[in-house]
Each structure stands twice: as structure tokens, then as C-alpha cells.
Length: 136
Length: 385
Image (cartoon, rainbow over all chains, first blue to last red; front, side, top):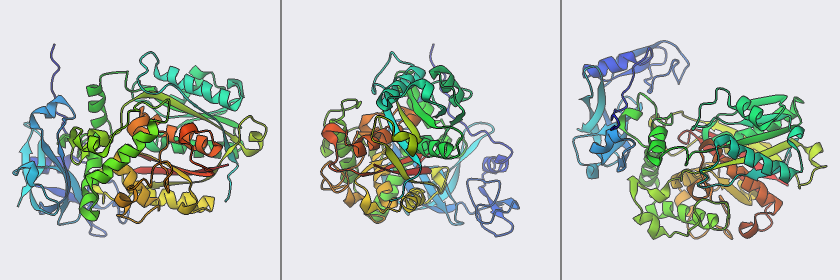
């Protein structure tokens, strides 16, 4: 019997539902603090800068730069085997937060720290879309 | 230097490497019995127990499962889960339990059959999806656990000019130390060229830049300084300790500076020591880059100079600061959360002067550093005789 190859999918929850819903519609949103005005990511229940609970999902530009990256040559599971080599990236957004993503739209060898990037959206299923980044 | 009222009086290891005929509890029992024999104590002398979770089995309450199966009548027991910093954390938490008067002699034990329990592919998948990466915001992008550290390495190279050769130097030095440890998992010598030509896993990390996967367990017995005076071994005192945490997941951090800055500062402050006082440092070495970043953050060199620091034999035996003298996680053995505990055992051997062919001459003060998560949570100990 062959093993079922299942790609690990994000499972939205009460704290993250708006992020995934926006991504599915092709937008990037981040929690922004209504007290101190700062954005943060990944989502915390309290603002990491001032501990306020007055957080609101707010659209961000989707523009940023490549902060760091790695070219993955050995897939973590069979679900990713067809995609190697691929780039796992950390992106720094113009608004400040950093997040992990994949770099698409260029060869892994072209990845360079500091390169300008913009968000793109990769539909994984009928209900889940993954934000990825490509060169601006 | 100051001393807390806690002393390490017994150390033990199970066989480390591929040990397919022993379960997690059996490996822990082997290590515990070795530590009791080392201390000249019986299981009935133990009245406190600390352990860590394991990955190969589900234990509803790990400290209860281990205490019951090892036959410990515990007045105090707890499960310490600081991921890779658990080994260091157990020693300090044992010291606190003793200082409170709740118990007098604590067995700290950790380890499992991480290698033999399942296939290597299963272990890689389970680690990639098992918590180091954020389940919603990181795992779907396909990072290996090594990828999370590769992001640190790439950024460090960009900011400070650190080179693949410098990373490789760490693996080569630690392998040389493992070759002198009869219980180490990987003992064949390697060169910088071997590391650079080994399989690229997740750039810039090659397979030899990554920790191995092993079976094994380690145990340490902690008691009060007063009680330690009547026991068989020269007591090794806990001189100071510190903790640090600056992020939980790696994707939203600055990558190249860690909570080791805080854990190291507090360890030196509580001990009344400085990095210059350290004779041997058992640095957590899940990846080669980890060592470079930790040497900087603990204050052995300036930020960005870690790559140069590891060159020219400085971190090897006979060098200015011998590190991870048992072979660490890169070569000695890495059975999960118990992995960092071998660093504690080796620090005790070094300051006792019992490290054999890998003894650091006149070692009196040892630093032990553990990190858990993705250079997330840190615990630093200073030990001395």
C-alpha cells in the first residue's frame, strides 16, 4: 500500500482566521495595535510592544525585501519532493513585521538578501491560499 | 566565585549511538544506574526526579512515568520542557527544589531511542512538522528543522562575512573531540573539505553541519553541598545560571542575536565570573552555526566575530577555549531533548579531571549552554569544583 502524500496545510483558528480568509481573496493583512500603532506578526493575543489587546487586522502593502533564505535540497516529507530545490525565505515587510514564505518567480540561484519582493498568492486547495513572494 | 548550595555528585550515560535493543525507559534506567554507581548511592536515596518529554512515545506525565518505572519515591517531581535547554534547566531546577527543603537528592534523567524507534525519513518528517516551525505560518512552506537554522547562517554570512569553511571548522573540531570519546556515536575524523563536499541539505548547511540522530540517555544526581561532602565523588558546584528567550519561532526575529545574551549575562552575574574565567565550554551544537552565534552571544567574542573565533584551533583541545569536548550533538549523539544533557555530564567530567584523552588541563570552571526551539529558549550554567 502506498503512503498517501499529504502536504501540511495551515488550519485557521479563532486567532488566525482573518489572515487566511484575506489571503484566499488575494490580500495580506497583519495585526495592528490601535493603541501604539505598530504592526506585528505572527499574531499574538496582546501587542508585543505595549501589551494592548486592541488589535485589528489591517491591510499591508505586500511589499518588502528578502531578509534571509535557504535553498531546500532535501524535502522534509514526500509532499515536497517534487518541488526541490525550493527557497524558504524570511521576508521583511515595509510595515516592519517579518514572516516566513517561499520565493517564487525566480530561480533559487537568483535569491539575494535585500532584493525587493512583493506578495503573490498560491492557491493550495478550494479553501486555502498560501501567501508567497516574488521579485518586484 | 560564588557557589549555590547545590552540587552534582553523580553522572551517567547509557550506551549512545545505535542501540536498537533498548526502549526509552530502559536507556534512562541504564543512565540512572550509572549515575547512582558513580555517586555511590542507591535508588532509595533519591527523593526527587526531573525528566523531559520524549518524542518516541506519548507519556501523559513524563516525570510520573519515569519515576514510577525507575522506582523513585519522589517527594518532588516535575517535567522540564525547555526543548534543547532542558538539560541545563533540570540542573538549576533540581538546585531550587533542594534549596526549598522539599527534597534532598534529585535524579535528573533524559533520553530515548530516537534513532531506532522508526525510520530516519519518519524522524525527519516528524521533526519538521513537530513544533520547531510554526504549524500555520512556517510548516506549509516546507522548511526542514535544519532550514530554520540555515536562515540564521545565511543572514550571519550576509551581515558578517562568515564563511562555509568557518562553519565546517566547527564540525571538524567537534568530530575530533568525539573521536576521543569511546561512547560517541560518530568517531571517524573528517576534514573541512569533507564537510564542504558532503550533501547540501538546505543551503548553506551540508549534512555534516547538522546534528546526528541517536539513541541514548544521560543522568545527573544533584544534592546539597553539605550532603555532597560525605559522598564518593568530588562535588561539582552549580556556580551560576541564567535563562533567556527572545522569540518562539524563527520567522519573525532578527536571526543573528539570541536569548543567549541574557542567559549568559545572568549566569556570569550569579557566579561572579566572566567569560575569561571559563576553562572549557560545552556549547550546544545542533548545527555548526549555532555554535558561532552562541560564542558571540555568551561574550566569548564580539557579535560578528564568531566565524574568526572558531578558526586556527581556538575551540579545539589545547586551544584558548576548548568547546563541546565529548563530541556534542554533531558527532557525540543526539537523542532529542536529552541531547543537551550530555553536555552537562561532560562538563562535570572535565572539572573533576576525569575526561581521559580529552581532558582540558587544569579545568576548574566549565560553562554549559543549552538552546531549545530555534535558538529560542536558552539556559546557561557555570559549574566548578
